Length: 235
Image 1 (cartoon, rainbow, N blue to C red):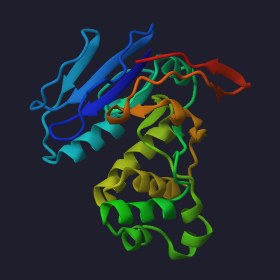
Image 2 (cartoon, rainbow, N blue to C red; image 1 turned 90 degrees about the vertical axis):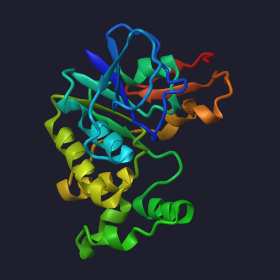
Image 3 (cartoon, one colour; image 1 turned 45 degrees about the horizontal axis):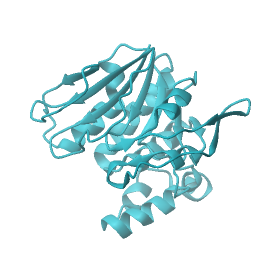
């Protein structure tokens, strides 16, 4: 059984028009705190936990990367609450029998991400990140690790190495406060490279504040074996 889950806390993300279309073999769960008012379809289960972390963002990241500790499913698909994902795309990505992240659609490595954080968030993390890795490996290895967009990722509960990577990512996040950066540091420390899906997937995903009822007629090649899936109109 597959679970699609998201995390919503007070003052951090909202459900908006998240795609909850009923699909066979999938259960939907929203993890939230006790303060957040939610309106969800009847087939969506809401699990509430007390926010003992205090910070809504920390609560979000904790359950984002640790849902497997509380939910008993074979496959987990995390999707940020503020994304609209076409049902046909969900059908494609849930068929995969391995754990994976998806390539970042705009940036390719940690250097570009750190520069974007400094430019748009006015947060300087270069020195802090470099203090977390061996200096001699920064140039040769760390700065070239592929960047992921962690708004969507999938994993198997049986994939213990991937679960340890998620745990390390959260622990790194507590210090670095950016989960893309925290994941790269976790991958460096474990010398582990998870499977990466191509960034083409993001062509068919929109945020709610940019949703315009697009007509998707392009072909998306995402499955091994050169399988092509035609996207259709969605709202």
